[in-house]
Each structure stands twice: as C-alpha cells, then as structure tokens.
Amino acid sequence: MSFRLGLLGEVVRMAMDTLRTNKLRSALTVLGVVIGITAIVGMTSLIRGFDESLRNSIKEIGPNTIFVQKFGFTSLGSGRSFTELLKRPNLTIGDADAIAAEAPTVKMVDVWLGGGPGRIIQERIAYRNTRTKPTIVMGSTQNFAAVSFIKLSAGRFFTGAEVLHHRKVVVLGHNPYLTLFPDTDPIGKSVRIGDGRFTVIGVLGKRPNPGFGNAGVDDFVVIPETVYQDQYGIDAVHQQRGTMQNVMIVAVPRDGVSRKAALQDVETVMRIRHGLKLDQPDDFDLVTQDEALKVWDRISSATYLGLVVISSIALMVGGIGVMAIMMISVTERTREIGVRKALGARRREILWQFLIEAACLTLVGGVLGVAIGSGIGILVHYLSGFPISLPWWSFALGLGFSASVGIFFGMVPAVRASRLDPIEALRYE
Image 1 (cartoon, helix red, strand yellow):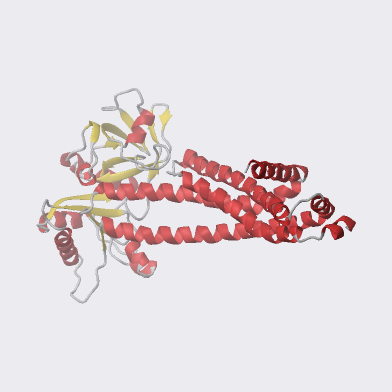
Image 2 (image 1 turned 60 degrees about the vertical axis):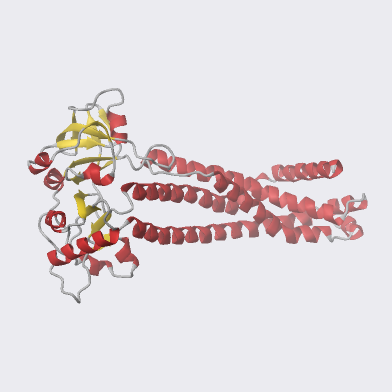
C-alpha cells in the first residue's frame, strides 16, 4: 500500500511538473473547462439564491393568501400571448373594496402598487448625506403588515385616515433602516424618496433570507397607495385596458375558512365587477402559494436544464482540447515511455500516469472555475444586492465534473501510451 501511495505521489508530481513546463499550452487547454465550471458554480449560486429567497418570501406570506393579478406566470405559462393578456382590464382599488365588502369568506384585503408583475419603482432613499442603493418603493393600504405577516420592529404602520388624506408617511424595510439610521431612532425623521419628502413612522422587522448576506427581501419601503399614485402617475382607480399598471390585490381568508371557498368568493366578486358572462373565461389571475411555487418549479427546472446544456458544451470543448494536448504529449514523450517500460514500468502504471496528468490538468481548471464562479456571484451580490447561495456541493460538483472530464477524455491518449512497444518507443526520434 505504501509503495502504491508513493508511486501515486510521484505520478502526481510528474503531472504537475509537466503542467508547469508548458504553462501557455496548459492554460489554453483548460480554458473550456474553466468556462464550464464557472458557469456551473456562478449560475448555480445566483439561481439557488434567488430560488431560496423567492420560496421563503412566498411561504412567509401564508399558504392560504390569495393574490389577484391582471395576469401573471400562470397565464403566461399556459401559452397565452402577451398582447392578448394586455387587453385585460387593470385591477383597481374598487376591485379590492368590492372583495372586502362582498366576499364573506375574506377576512382582510390589501392593494399593492409596485409589488407585483409590471413596472417596479426603485428609488434611492436619502437622509441628510446618506443614501441607500436603489430600493423598491411600494404603495399599499393600512393592511400591508397584517396581510404580509410582517412584524414592526419600531413605530407603527400608517392608518386608513393617512391613506385617505394622502399623508406623506413611510414605513422603512429593514435594510433601508440599517443604511440610513444605524445608530439613530428613525421615527419622526424626514427622508427623501424621489421628488417627495416623507416622514418615517415605522420600521418593519427583518424577514428571513436564505441568500448570501442580508440583501433582497428587506430592500423596500412602503408608502400610502394614494401618495404612490400621486407621485408616480399610477391610476389605480379607473379600469383601463391595453396598459400595464402594477396593481395587485391580496386577500386573506377568515380563520376556519377553506382556501377553496375563499377563492370561489373572490372569483365571483371579480367576475361580477368585470361584467363577465358564464361562458367567458376569467380576465384576471388568482394565484396562491402552491400555484406560484409550481410555476416557479417549472421555470427553475428549465433554467437548470439550460445551464447543464451550456456547461456541458463548454466542458466537452475543454475535454476535446485535453485529449488533443495529451495525444501531442504522448507523441513528444515516446522515448520517455520507452525508457520507463525498459526499466520495468507496467502498462497500468503508464496508463495511470497519463490519466492522472489529464485529471490534474482539468482539476486545475476546475479550481479556477470554482474561484471565478464564486467571485462572480459575490460580485453580483455586492453590486446589486442580488441574493446568492454558495452550497458546498456546488464546489464538489464543479471539481468532480472537471476531474471526470480529464479522466474521460484522457483515456484514449493514456491507453495509446500504455500500449506502446518499448523497443519501438526507444527507436522513436
């Protein structure tokens, strides 16, 4: 066993010496492997970070919460054209009021402006000389915290009267609060959001975020929906067609009421509001947690499949390069192989020498790919706050793939080297 380990160590050292003496050739050879592993690690970190953050955000709202949208992923995933969906009427504040008044199974209703599909407003929130990074601005009623199941860490939420009278008050998400008021009580302070001055009346608690760092789900502020309409020119009062207003209605069923019964009530109210006949399909989408997760599962599966295809192409190109370089290496070292065989080296030892050399070559590319892919993910997170996830298995997967590529594509040149006749090899010039 000690003899075999010593032989393995010697073979590894010889392989690394070969790589060091042919730096440029080795670098060009592993370029495809580096690109493939970088794609695997970098994209996996971004997709998994977004996936975990999105799932956590959806689950946090509650399994029975109902979202009413003009259209969303469910309609787009069913194959309907965007032009057809755009002709649907925009949701309005009146729709939300009707659900609250006429759906007996619904406990609470809120309207989110800028919190659903469509145009998302991002502003830098400023306090004195401090500014946040671009932060999502949402408009809602006084029920936002209740329907979102978010607790306040300081202050209070705005009231119905403040919404009705267009009061310029704001409730900060956790991240804007940390940026603007790390050591100061924010309540009562005046901050600038876009062209408006707002008084801070509350701070929302931190929401769980499985991504890298504390970015993502807490990068937002909430203002009254009436003020949002005034400041950003959103019309959530009149039922318009052919435009895309980012208006979403959120309904929470009463305790003890099944989600199915609440969905039926909401659907009935919306169909009456939109004047739909019995044979006409819904011109709105009703989305629940389960449906949202199903749609996202289909999207993420397709994304992962695309990632695998792209990475496989890059790894195949890199593997072909490894095979070509190893074939050249076998030809250049024919006399060396003859000498080793003349001194007693067996076929399997020659085979392992070239296999390990190919594996070392691609493994170096794998290490570089893992480092670059992780760096890309961390850089994207640092610049944009995009949540990322860097699980250990993504590193193991990248290194395992790279070593496997070396062994697979290095097999042909290794077998060729092991089958060389020692006498003919020694005669080779």
